[in-house]
Structures are given as C-alpha cells and as structure tokens.
View 1 (cartoon, helix red, strand yellow):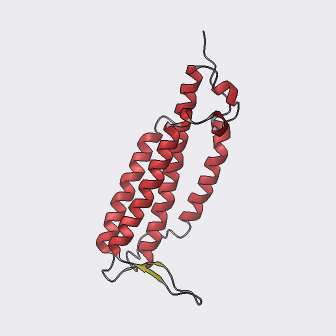
View 2 (spheres, helix red, strand yellow):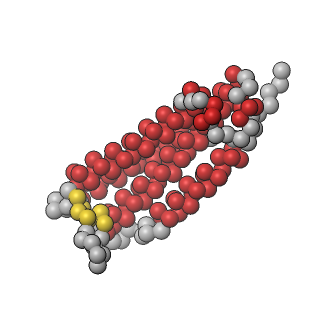
Length: 167
C-alpha cells in the first residue's frame, strides 16, 4: 500500500483530464446521460452541468473517503470495524499501524471508484458519437464494480492483525 497515494492522485488527474477533453468535444446542444426507453425520455444535461456534476461527485467521494481514513482513530470504538479490534487499539504503535492501513485501504477504494467513474464517463463520451475508433469500454464499469467488491473483501485480509514488533 506504499504506492497507493500516488496511484490515487494519478487517478484524480486522469479523471480531470478526461473530463476536460470530454467537455471540449461534447456538443453544445447537451449531453445524453441516460438513453431513451419505451417508458421514459432521454436524460440530457448541458455540457457545463455535466462537467460540474461529475467533478462534484468525484470530489465528494474522494474527500469523504480520505476523511474517513484519516479520522478512524477519532471514531467511537463501536464504529471501528476491523478484525481483532482489541489488538489494533492496544498500543499507540498498533493504532498508528491501523491508521496507516485504513488510510491506504480507503485511498485504494477511492482509486477504484475513480476508475468506475472514469469508465462511466468514457461510456457517455462514446455514446455521444465521439471517437468511434477508441477501444470499447462497455464492460469496464462491470469490471470496476467487481474490483470494488473484491477490495471490500480484501479489507479483512489486509487488516487481520497488527504486525508484531520486537521489544
């Protein structure tokens, strides 16, 4: 989890860059976010509303997860969900290990969610008729969703017990 902060920051910059690129190429008439069905009409947003909404969602999720990871030790003990909680909260050293582990895990989760948002943005961009030659991204949200579920399961393996220290 040493490099997760770098990968997380990189995912933020990639999303920002792709959002700006999409903003430039989206039509002024609007962005079709949800296609029309037999029961409902298509949902169309202006390109500036779409850009600011997507950036707001990205920032909200990332700030919330980063804040949760950094404040885990300030939560009441009943709200801390970690295997072997008593061992994690025994000493200051194990509490610091818990803090670092949870911060890394939440940044990893934020990175995967950023990937999911990026794949969704790619699908919307492609649905507008742009860059037909680009690789297809239809299955990317499903792949990122599976990775997110796997990341939730990995939490219990990553946080199983604090590392023993030599006294």
